[in-house]
Length: 211
Image 1 (cartoon, rainbow, N blue to C red):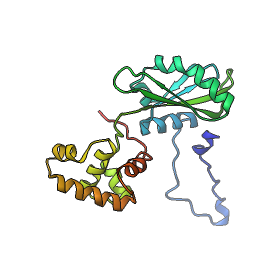
Image 2 (image 1 turned 45 degrees about the vertical axis):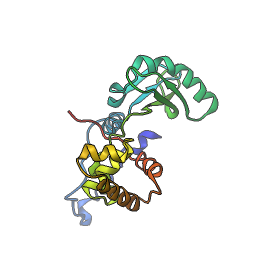
Image 3 (image 1 turned 90 degrees about the vertical axis):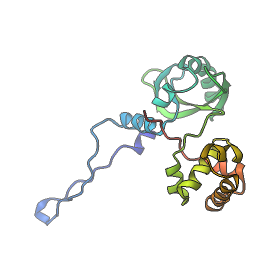
Image 4 (image 1 turned 45 degrees about the horizontal axis):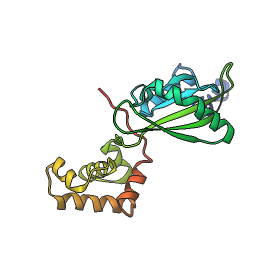
């Protein structure tokens, strides 16, 4: 079950009469419910997620979903057909819809191992901007791949779809410098080229924008 991942297991403290030493740094768990913890975790990742019931009605939306290029109304209109297909095929299914702005938005509906109170199984629909930027923190890339700040910045911009010449112009450096950082990025990430680099970087969760 999804909620089992965030439900803490608290081990009882041994009785004092057997010489147990109290744990000085014992973990303190938040008082929020498991469902609230899951919602907060999804919001922190910036993923555009919609939870819908077996009729395709939206019952919960992450902060990323509220900020998504596709309106809730557009997702709600596509959800019933997506849910029917996901229920029939027993797997994740997808559909492209027009966004309120810019490029199309891809919807991916996946059956969840949760039941609605009255409406049967629940489904998670993730909305992905098909041409939107990755919004990955360059510092995070540096920590994950051992990149210098300059290398991480170039790798992040390549993952956003920018060409080396445009990256050089944006960063105010020479094209040769960008190519040097990019080749070092290939070596440190193990990527075999720009397409492979983008594929690897896409596995990193996008970071939520902060005001």
